Length: 432
Ligand SMILES: *[C@@H]1O[C@H](CO)[C@@H](O)[C@H](O)[C@H]1NC(C)=O
Ligand SMILES: *[C@@H]1O[C@H](CO)[C@@H](O)[C@H](O)[C@H]1NC(C)=O
Ligand SMILES: *[C@@H]1O[C@H](CO)[C@@H](O)[C@H](O)[C@H]1NC(C)=O
Ligand SMILES: *[C@@H]1O[C@H](CO)[C@@H](O)[C@H](O)[C@H]1NC(C)=O
Image 1: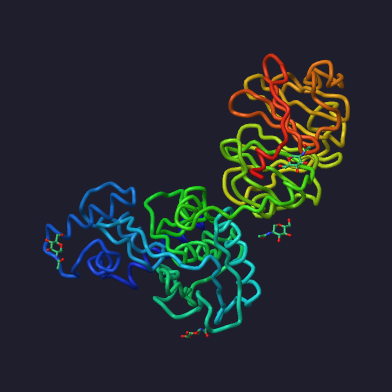
Image 2 (image 1 turned 180 degrees about the vertical axis):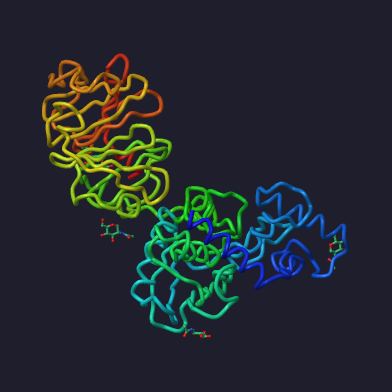
C-alpha cells in the first residue's frame, strides 16, 4: 500500500515538475514526426504510430498511458520511422577493439569491463567477430559516461559503425544488480543494447529482442533473434576442426536445434549432419559447468550435463543459459549409476538412455519416481548389436537414427529396429 501511495506521489510530483511534456518534440526526436510543429492530422497519425509500435491502444490522443510510455526509460537513438528496421553499416574487420574512456559513480572501470565482456561473449557467440579491450585511443568503440537528459528517459546512445562510440547517461541511478532493476537502472541491459548499435543493429519492434528501444528487466541479454541477425551480418564463427580430425575423443553431443559437439571446455556446432563452426568456449552458453563432462542430453527446453556423480540442469529461456540445479544423478534419475559415458533422450517414448561401459540403462520419465528405470544395466551388445563398449558420445538425429561415437568412428543405428545402418570414419561428420 505504502509503495502504491509513494508511486502515486512520485507521479503527481513528476506531473507538477513537468506540467508541459512536449510530446511533439518527443515524437520528432524519435523519428515519428519529421517536424516538431506538425498539423493536427499529422500529429494524430504520429501518436497512433507511436501507440501501435508500443502495443498501446491506438486512440490517436495523448492519454496517460501514452505519455507514461514516452517518459519511460529507453535508448536515445530514434526509431527511424518509416524505415523502422533499416539496416545499418557493419564493421569491415572481423576483429574490433573497445576502450573504456571514463566511467562515472558508482562504477569502477573493472565492473563496467566485466559487464561489457559478458555481453560481448553472448553477442559474438558463434559469430565471426572478435571484440577485445585496448588501451589505445584508436579503439574502434570508445565508451564514455556523459551528461545527457538527467535521470530517467534516455539511458544511453551509440553510433553505428564505422563510429561505434557509446555514451551512457552518467546521471542515471545505475545498478549492476538486475534484481534492483525496477527502481534503479540495470547497467547490463543498457550495455548490451548500445553494444548492439555499435555492431550495426537498429532498433526492433520485438519485445523479446534486446534491440527494442525501451529498457527492460526481462530481456537483459541478446536473444536468439539478435544473435541470428548479427550472424547474418558477419557470418558464422570460422571453423577449426583440426583437433577433431586428429582423433581427439568427444565428451558429449547436446541435441539442440543445431547440435553441439562438446570437447573439453569448447564446443562445435553441427548442422545438416556436418560440423559448421567452432571451437567456441562452452561457458559462453553454459556458465557453471565443471572442466570435464561425461554426457549431455536435452529434455524439452532444459539441457542436462552429467559429470562424475552429478548432473547440471540448464534452462534455455535466455542466453546465456541459466544453471537451475546441480544434483546427484542418483537423486534425479532413480538408480542410474555415476560416471556415465553417453546419454540421449527419446521424446516420443519419454525415455532417457544412458550408456556406461558395456551396459545401458533406460529411464521412462513418465513413470512414478522409483519406478522409472525400465532397463537397469543390460548389455549394450544384446539390444544395440554392433555398438562397442565405452562409447564417447551419443545423440538422436532428426530422422530417428542414433549416432554413437567412439575412437573417431561414427555408428548409425535405426532407433526403432536397432539395426546398425553404417559404421564410418567420423571425418565426414567432422568435415575433415
Ligand atoms: C513530412 O511528412 C509528411 C507526411 O507525414 C509529408 O507530407 C511531408 O512531405 C514531410 N516533409 C518533409 C520535409 O519530409
Ligand atoms: C567522460 O568524458 C567525456 C568526454 O568524452 C566528458 O564529457 C564527461 O564529462 C566525462 N565523464 C565523467 C564522468 O568524467
Ligand atoms: C586450430 O586449432 C589448433 C588447436 O586445436 C591450433 O593449434 C591451430 O593453431 C588452430 N588453427 C587456426 C588456423 O587457428
Ligand atoms: C579417418 O580418416 C582420416 C583421414 O580422413 C584418417 O587419417 C584416419 O586415420 C581415419 N580414422 C580411422 C579410425 O579410420
